[in-house]
Image (tube, rainbow, N blue to C red; front, side):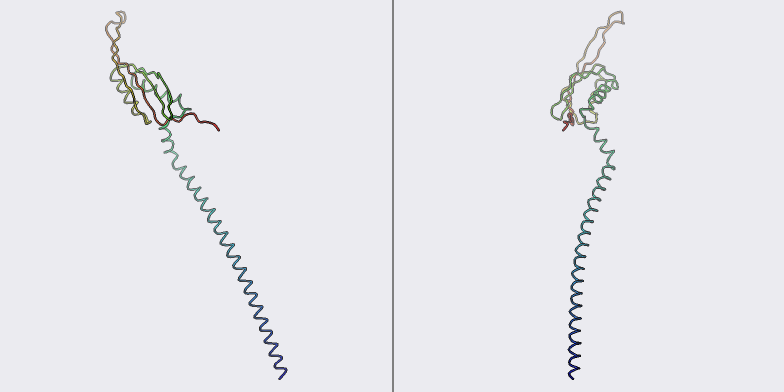
Length: 185
């Protein structure tokens, strides 16, 4: 019987040792699995954050590309300092279009407003057409002064004689949306 008790004690000790060993292995596996899950969650969060940023950047790039034409159109509503020669030619071309002689007599800047003074000479109809063309420029503008005077010019007998009537116009215009010269940093 003593041998049976010894065997039973030995088996019991072995089973207890085996159970403790299995519990240790289970605990170790559980902790490793927890670390792996935390690392996977961290990597997943970083990946989602990266993809979110990249997605936002791609959305912005797409928006920039898709609005290119609209931005070009909006740019035409502003006069930039560097575009002043082209702008002056555009204004002077209104004289040819309307059939009047047009001269830019003054140009100034006040904040983001371009101050423009022009004078014209031509028939009454053509002068009114010039005013209409100015009003329809693709800029936000205001004609602050408009003076249209009848000018009589006597023609010599050598040129056919008589009196030539023409209309002299003087206009002051404020063009809003002027972009002054860029300051370089």
